[in-house]
Amino acid sequence: MAALDKSCLVELGPVPFKDVNNDDDNGQTAISPPTEYADIVATLPSIAAIGDSQLLKYQDVWLFIHGVTGVISIQRRFKSRPGDVLLASPPKCGTTWLKALSFATMARAKYPPSDANHPLRRLNPHECVPFMENLFSAGQEAKLEALPSPRLLQTHMHYSVLPRSLADCKIVFVCREPKDMLVSMWHFLQSAGFSFPFSDLFELACQGQNPHGPIWSHLLGYWTASTARPEMVLFLRYEDMLADPVSTVRQLARFMDVPFTAAEEAAGLPVDIVEMCSIDALRELEANKTGKFGLFFKFQHQTFFRKGVVGDWVNYMTPEMARRIDAIVGDKLHGSGLTFTSVGTIASQDQDARTLLLPTSSSLSSS
Ligand code: PAP
Image (cartoon, rainbow, N blue to C red; front, side, top):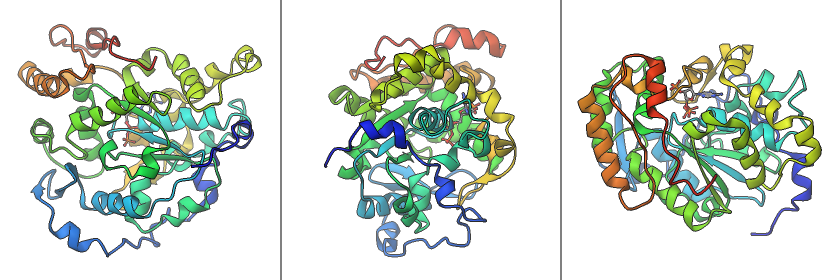
């Protein structure tokens, strides 16, 4: 793939997706799912999961049916461009935050964080950076073509199912301690109208059958890629981002080949970006208090900004549940060098839990 002239990246920056594709109804009336994959979909193993819905197993990943169509369509139709940057994650691991930080960092010349009309002050982060599966499953991939380079794109796909053209892009992956991820996912699905006990999602996760599961193969795919090609795959953890968001922003800028200059550092740009993208700042904005995201499932913008802490799992899991999933995930990750550490006993208060559960970062090669 031909390289993009990096000197122009800072000047250009990504353009907010919604500024280019501004449908009144967020693309609702233009939904036109591809039908040519019906034969493939019909043969896939399926399970009844999460209320009345089904999950299908496509290339060893459990997905809602729209997700399957989206992934197949991406595998067959996506055309990468020089300069594309892919943000990848399991759901509920900090995608919204990573979108905001990455967009603000890459677009800082055109949209300084001091700008009162900054795109992230008038749009939800998901309206700035498109979710690929959503668009391809709705037959709306032309909207990605309309987006000028450099493009920031987002996916929940496992590394193993990425088409070559996407795997060759620069990729930023963010993950999160799995128990907190599951609690966040449960709240999120409840907010979209799914009604089921947390224990259902927990059981699915233990079997590797949660939406976008197995959790461990999602993690291992990007972990392995990041250790093999650290200049192309940046592996981040939500917990590390919370502990030191300014360092994360600097890391993002370096990785995207747009490091902060001495003048930008002196002007406090990394700190300004972190403050603009903090959960407290974002959740107060009208764009995030109102509106919905999603084509097949609808999620209120406000549901993307819940607690934003480490260790909320203690409020939803028994010690036995925690030990069980820790053991399963630990066993699956064994030997990879990737670990998640839950220290101590179950705390009764959120605040105690946060201090107990901060992960060790000894296995991180990316910091
Ligand atoms: P998605 O996969 O549906 O896009 P994602 O953004 O990855 O969701 O995850 C949402 C989580 O990130 C929420 O965690 P919680 O349920 O445990 O609270 C949400 O609160 C958290 N989050 C969203 N924005 C921020 C932010 N700016 N800073 C820190 N955490 C955030």
